[in-house]
Length: 277
Image (tube, rainbow, N blue to C red; front, side, top):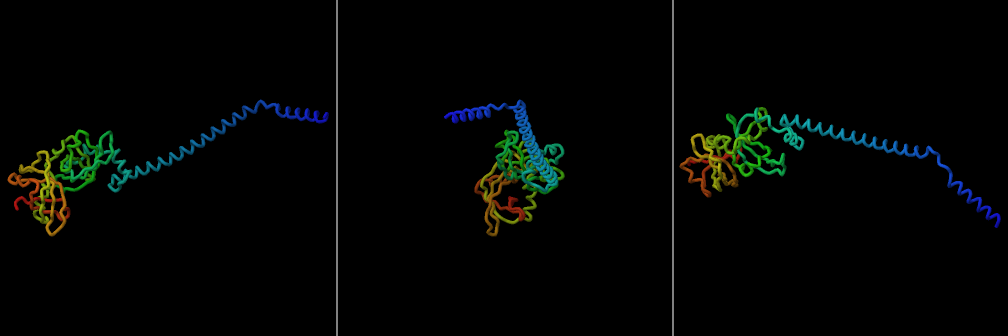
């Protein structure tokens, strides 16, 4: 028992001595300094990696936008980057440097986008300018909220055209819709269509206002919705257009009336009514 007690005493003393071993004074500062250096090094490495990756991503984006801008200026690219570039760059330069013309709204659709709280509209336009044949162009532009409901298919708008790229244009909203000028596709091409167009008939489905427009000889211009049936058993189709109506034939604009027409072989939507038949 004496030996056991002595052993117990020695064991206790050993444990106590191990537990109470004094810690050097430099241990805590060294540990804290090491943790600070480790954390700062980790943060620096992470920030450097983030900056490098962001720099690469932005350089790729800027390259794509620059390429799209250059190609868009040449009229050779479309897609997302070209659309973003066109929307941000705008066509304000055409308001002073563009060629004045008119454009008939063939169709229009809401894109679901807004710019500066204005709705972005996709227009299908038929552009007419002095001394040139009319042509179609797809165009996107914001529509002033005060004109929502006033600008509709069949409406004539004043536009300004890029002299180097005729498909690039801007709408001159300072000119009220319908007052851009009396030049529309029927007035420019009716005589030619009557001479060389394909025969057919058209049923008047309805009419719409052209805001008091008149032809050069004073005849009113009426907006028509027609169901056109080409001769030869071809399937009928519908068109919307503005057409000169001699005063003596205004009674023939009522819905259900059948009219003799001539149709352009290269574009079936170009139709001229033969009022003298």
